[in-house]
Length: 244
Image 1 (spheres, rainbow, N blue to C red):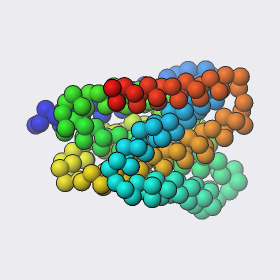
Image 2 (image 1 turned 180 degrees about the vertical axis):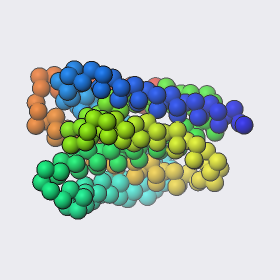
Image 3 (image 1 turned 45 degrees about the horizontal axis):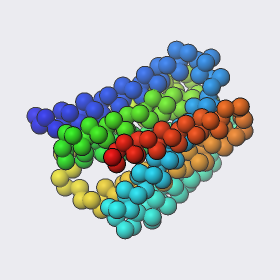
Image 4 (image 1 turned 30 degrees about the vertical axis):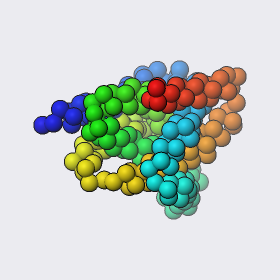
């Protein structure tokens, strides 16, 4: 078995572990987590939106000239999914909030799946390139697990189901995406990967700007702007570390 594959698989499993630790932490210290939900939401929004604008979108633009169309498509896909879930899945007013958890979960799941694909690509180039990518990408996994779990709980899911689905969407998808994509990487051209990155960026912009930030504004907390700023700074640091 290729050492590049084993290293990439280990990196993707590390990312899944960090996400799982975030889910465990919020379940183990529930009161603390609920009290600080707004801060987590603001931090995650800062990370997701900033990483999209500072890294995913520019990278996809360099890979395909049609990136703006796929970016819009990713955003509209999430919007239409939200409308569909609200109208047809949530068939009673008491369950309407399910969409607030399901739609972000879809976006985060797509993002995590593509994280696995990115690990395959970077480690195929070289182990050093992969390690540099992992150093930045793993940093956002912990709050991602926390936020996915919190959104599902607040949307009406039981704590057990929220933990299970958060694990599947935010953690398990990364090694699955890596293992599934690695044998096909040699067949995937740069344009196709750029399109996938654009779709992911559009979905993540929707998750951060349309769900996380509005919720944070409805539950204004004293240091929410600081948390948002911290997320932006972390994202900027990730991008700078990857570009140095």
